[in-house]
Image (tube, rainbow, N blue to C red):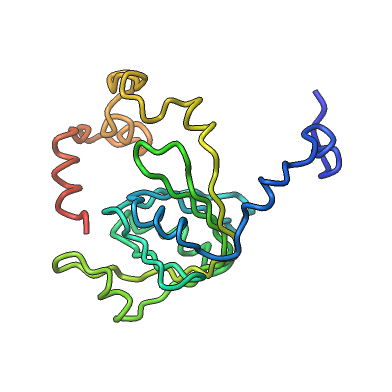
Length: 203
């Protein structure tokens, strides 16, 4: 085994990217990216922590929950979570982020990289209100790179093929796993109890 320690050694193994792989990268959101974002109910937000470790977190809502304000600006509402605010803390200190948008059933994904700031502007928050709930903040993302990713990873994984999905019983329930992880002596929360709690604090 030989660890790869330099970009040159890495490139020697993989060769040069195809001209199309380089040419597809944009510095803005075009009409195709805008349409993709409008259909996407889910993204993965990647940031970097103070210790240099990467941090990836899911974000999801109704399709099009991310607003394309203009060709270089995205607005992402921050919905209620566990209040760890790991990603937001990372952004305050290191604004560079990566976004991966997915659409159920689509093999392609959309990658967007840029810089983000956290904003509590009431007008921006009101634009992302759900019923009586306002997001505490929104992320305002300045787009630096945007490009469509081919579907090979999703084809290999069969991600959208229900007949390839494992039985849920292959893992303990979330309540049981949390009981072990938190070393709690309390009875584990049931799936039904957890779902009811989620519904009460979804927005």
